[in-house]
Amino acid sequence: MDPDGQDPVLIASSSNRSKMRLYRRAPVCLTALAIVIAIALLMRSADAEPLTPLQVAYAGSMGSMMDGAMREAVAKSLGAELRGRAQGSTGLANLIVAGSIRPDVFIAVTPGPMRIVLKAGKADRAIPVARTAMVIAYSPRSRFAPLFAHADRPDAKPWWQILEMPGLRFGRTDPNTDPQGLNIIFTMQLAATYYKQPELATRILGPQINPEQIFQEPEVMARLQAGQLDASSAYKTQPTAMGLPFLPLPDAINLGDAAMEPQYKIAEVTLNGKSLHPAPLVLYAAVLNDAPAPALAKRFVEWLSGPEARAIFSANHYDDPGDAAPLTP
Image (tube, rainbow, N blue to C red; front, side):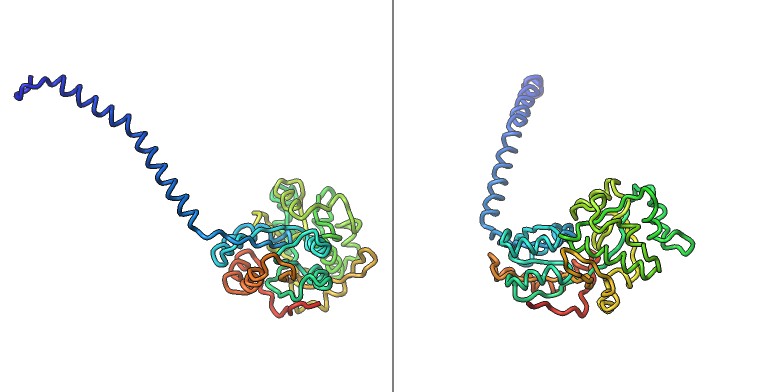
């Protein structure tokens, strides 16, 4: 017995029973607290303004930027949910003209696909928003990777000779549906003149439509990452976003310098009976005349020319459009 006449054993037993009751109640209390928090969050979410959908059809090469930083910025600055469709620009232009898709905004690489849309009366004006250039991307898993990594050294094998080596697997897109597939042919033709190698394009690309080299645009980068291709054509914006190395090309052949457009025009490709010439790799954006959300579409295209969007373009290795002029029908 303690001095107060209480049994210590009984006191300890009573204390333990109290603690056990508290322990048993703790999960119940925590569960109740979690429910209260969840209800509060749901109520806050219900009170928040829903984001307005913004349908944007854009060149497949823009995919990682549009799905990442651009989507987040559009939600924050415009209160819109960017819902994108990434595909070759020419293919998208044809779908828009046929009425198969009805986006609010179309963003294309090079003037050609955008002119298809403008001439069909699907848009009235397209403004330049950015610019890129052709490069050669390569897989770090490739057995040719060490050669590509040192190709810029004066005593090393140049990039075009590496691409001619037996067994090298090269990837590109379909020139009929994707401007990049057309632009790599232009680039190789210009390289043939620049390096004084008349058969260079044929030796590297084979026939104009070469099933062994042609893949869908998103698939090309994925195959490089997996090591299923050794090298591929690419816009400068693509490889870094995918964690892939690339070789820059001279301005005289990379289609990225608007001031060199007259020199680029010596390249020529015939597709479906039409004679085509290259244009600088400028990205154009247009509000479509039957846009589901025309006011939002206009705000978005204007926003693309502002400082916030410019910073995102720059962070993703796009250049300023320079002196490129708007397009009209």
